[in-house]
Image (tube, rainbow, N blue to C red):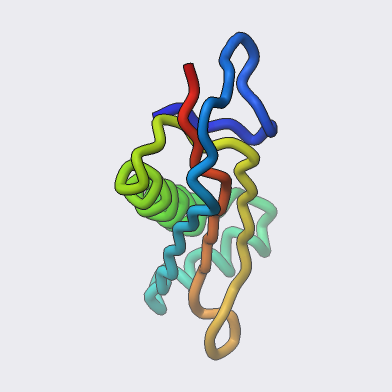
Length: 106
């Protein structure tokens, strides 16, 4: 599966559009991670716990979107958009959603 944020893929021709596909992942960070992330933020360091959670959520969302596209018979997804936000009580959960257009390219 080829992924692209652009509406087409250079050197390839889109022969069929299968429709919009999506993937979502919501991950909660446990209280220990929250406390440690807060301490790191205070001292200006990077928050490894949140970076790891974000990477994991993004990977899950892309895998879900890819599976949906494959079920439609697509071999590429173009026009991909990624959205992130915190949800839940006091932003305790991280949501990553991705969407794009499933296509067949040659």
